Image 1: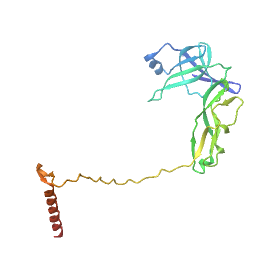
Image 2: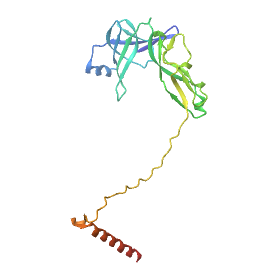
Image 3: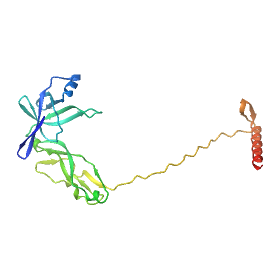
Image 4: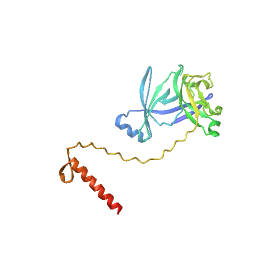
Length: 241
């Protein structure tokens, strides 16, 4: 279970864990009991197999409480079931609190842009995370971006526009666009048109050649043409009547 204790201006997040001795197919049993299989690894640290009751945590240091020991870690990766999105496994990376680390921190927008609310613009988030360097305990849970400064369609906010902090440094290139407001484009509706039947072109029959007719009999091409011409003339006469 995750708990928080106030330390100075920042909360300390603790996650209780148990040593895990179950592996492979037997892991489904502990998942059904509400636990998530996990591992702790890191430099100069012997890997530990554990199980935890996991709750959604923000970016930052998590203290794994196990065997009367509190281990500072960061969430390295989370594995989910591709169909149900249920948590399957978590990897925690042990960290040294005295050394700076880098982590991808999510972007959080604040306020409402006038270009969106009054001018029908569309807010386009181009970078949902930013690479940040800081001491583990100074790592922010999110990078806040004030979008009320965007008044017109076409305006954008880059990394260079983010207010600097004395506790962390954004390592993402300064020219990188974080978000922009673009014009709303309506999709044009193209009416369906009837497709003309393809014209069937047959090879011209040379004079003197025989062509097949109904019944399998073959006749000279000239005879077939004369027969067709006769039928056409008779048909015209019937119409005139």
